[in-house]
Image (spheres, rainbow, N blue to C red):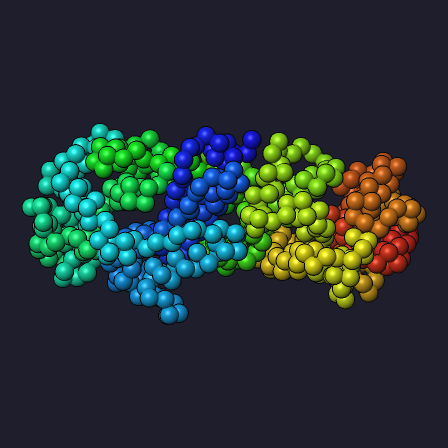
Length: 532
């Protein structure tokens, strides 16, 4: 059984699933794993006809802090100020820094089929007074919370520390204040210049009511309070929050011992590792989830996050590799297997369910989607680089019948993705410059055995259908007849057509070209003295 279906089968009663994000700047693509996971869990409950609500929150009352400094978006003069009141750096009519970056991230949800039932902004939740009773309870239980931090996480707060962060009346910062007293109605606080390395407090000390949005609870206390306020029953958390003694353990203890409620079920999920380096190295596309979503279509992006169980790290390095074409190939194999067609290699036991949850529309006709003709991504990337090719016409001919409206959508989606991949991520070997005017000078490197092999390929290719699989098979079979190692056989083809000894899959390269041109070029390159 698929992991999300197992979870749905093991839970009883109405479920409230929650996720949230602090909009500290440009959101890395790996941050999409959480929203995809909670969406998939929600779909599993709905497929089981269970009562479920998906909530998504923005922690915009958090301060602009050290995390913001990891991206070029930080406005350093506002370090320590609530994100909800920091100006929008892009000047594109959002009310705040938080609204800008949260909206850019949330805008990717619709394309991925992620549809929370409720969005909430914590600045509004606090401002409405909904958190006041939890803030009062936490302040009254300051000693208990300090003890939980010591016991669970070995974090020692001073005896006058209280679980609240006040917005300084003098400088407007929330990240630099510490509450040192509470009389049941008002808190005493200090805005300390040296409390944080990333922000300097103004030195003001004051006394104020913490309610109605004038203060917020620290992350672990705030998290536990939200669970009770919203009735959350399931909230997945990333590996960094789920470690022993980490944020999740602290919040669990605070939920039970301070607010008197059982914490929601956790579904820990691992990180997306981008080849050991940030995606900002990838030719200017940066870490942005929105930018990556422009390159990888939503169905394949969902699959990237769902093909492994949540507690398994995802290794993905798109820059200069075939990682993106392989992701498309995997998606196509799942579709073919779901449609009952034979595929090569092993498949996940739940391949049909994995294919279904990777679809953008949760109500899609899975059988119809699986049956749709899906041209290979690598093949389309080749065709995109061949001058004068009518892509839709070529794909229609390869299918052998007219394309449906949905199949035309898939072709266009993959065409756009192929262009973006070639521009941003593709290795040099995937970029083509076919020599149409004559045999390239590089073919002078061919030896007699390679030339004989190319000449023999003429009849071999003429005897099979003109498609990638069939041509690839003929290439291998002919090389075997000549006892020519595969590497040298493929190098001969690449030298004859591209003038270099490497390139994309040869069968698909040839099928992107006209049969007449291929046969003529093989005859020229196979002749003695080529390039002399």
